[in-house]
Length: 68
Length: 270
Ligand SMILES: [Zn+2]
View 1 (tube, rainbow over the protein chains, first blue to last red):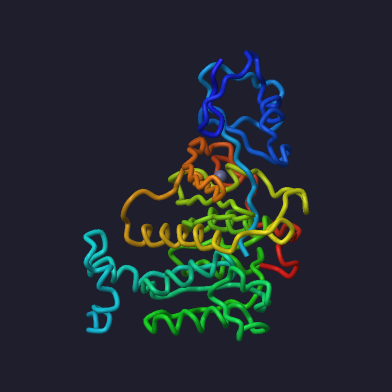
View 2: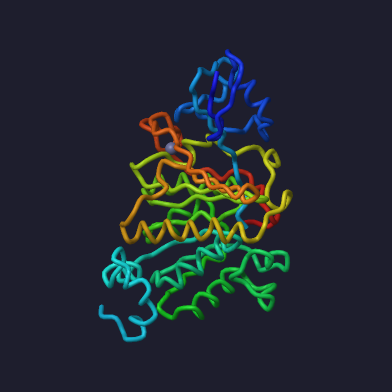
């Protein structure tokens, strides 16, 4: 199936979960990332059980603390 | 209030714009913007807002100028090392534009003082470097119903979003609570390209100016991310559901401001 990750279309295997995608994408500090699927938040405790579907659009939102 | 000849000349590139005009320039001159942090982000924000003729600019920072700041904090000069950042920032802004009244706050922003500091301002800029301050500013702005621009920078990356009460998610809608100290790298630990403050801070200044003028679309409901290495901007849509947010939601559980433990870039504060 095809999903979009951070704006880029990707071929991934059926049944892919958000938590597996986080591993596959080498997401930095994965325990503190905010994930949205189709512009809805995935609750942080539900990455394991959230199975992605064909056509889904996933975004990873990161803490960015610098400024000084 | 009529413009002086000098003002007509100074602001001529604004006044000629149909989105600004004399009316818009007067709005800017009557506007009050509070900038929290006089560092990498705060420097370009303060300089562009001062140059634009924003009439009252508040600036808060507890630190003194350090030599290691000068790689990115362009409002401060080498001669300013050792003096309070807010004083150095005031000098630069006043030298740029005598129309601007600068109000300095040489102190840390805390749950005790923030509501009092922001109450007289139209728009707030989060130009801080640490999560406790970012959450404090968010919560205070939600509670006080103040629009604000959030931003963060690190390495070759930056991002920002704009909160306007009732018009989209707040920072806490997206990030529930600060990460533990040292769990997420800061720019002191990870480094940052100085021009990143220029890119993202200038965008924050642009949001403040658009808000004051009431023109265009603000970054409400979006997070704009910038990756300098890929030279890519992305405007990421944020969920519009704010109902369950702990501070801006329907049944807020955070009703008092919180001073989280500090874990900042310079080890000395904002
Ligand atoms: Zn919220």
